[in-house]
Length: 78
Image 1 (cartoon, rainbow, N blue to C red):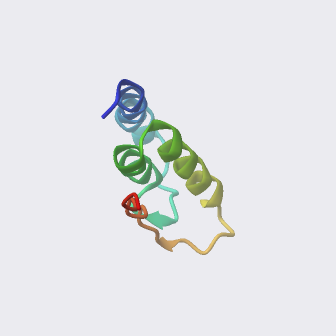
Image 2 (image 1 turned 90 degrees about the horizontal axis):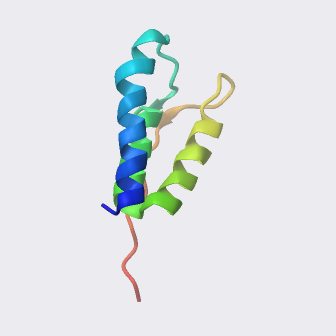
Image 3 (image 1 turned 120 degrees about the vertical axis):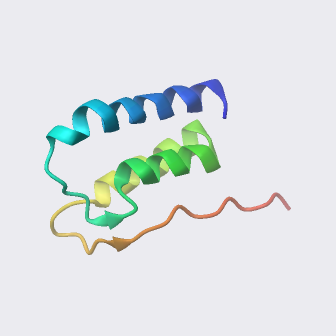
């Protein structure tokens, strides 16, 4: 991972360790939003992965359908 991706992954790890345990479980998707963000950043890099994670968090609300939502696989260059 690039340094910016590592920094973002570290911030997510801190959130999961110190903030998430004090909040009620509310993610409507599987995997959780933080797990999705880590995977998106790992597969797609800091910028694209962050955009994907933000879109996912925006979809995670009480009126959304929820369900299984995996990170899309990175496409090979033509």
